[in-house]
Image (cartoon, rainbow, N blue to C red; front, top):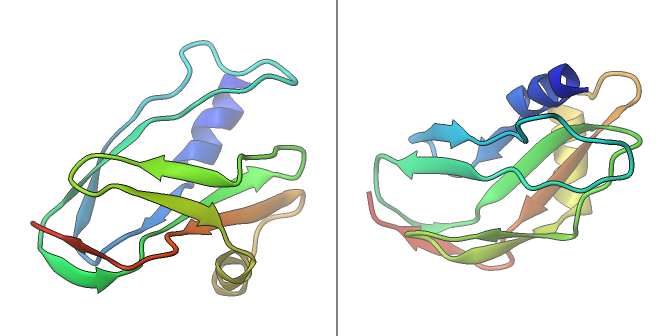
Length: 116
């Protein structure tokens, strides 16, 4: 199960800006047990400023997995990303999910500005 989580989290796509860097992804140390919940903190640094952008976060997940409808973003940017059928479908059109997987994408309801 831990190997599956690492592979799945390795497929995360974070569409935030043209210039960003994923600094860390903190995986559960011992994997996940069936019917359990877990959080995965992800740290991203932004290299250049931007104004009026809409943060989008997409995950490729097994069909049997579910996620909460909103994701909190904190730090130099504070917003909430909300599940989006439109963005999930856009990810599926851009990069079709393998069999037994699906795209789960969330977007900020507001545009934001980021200092680099």
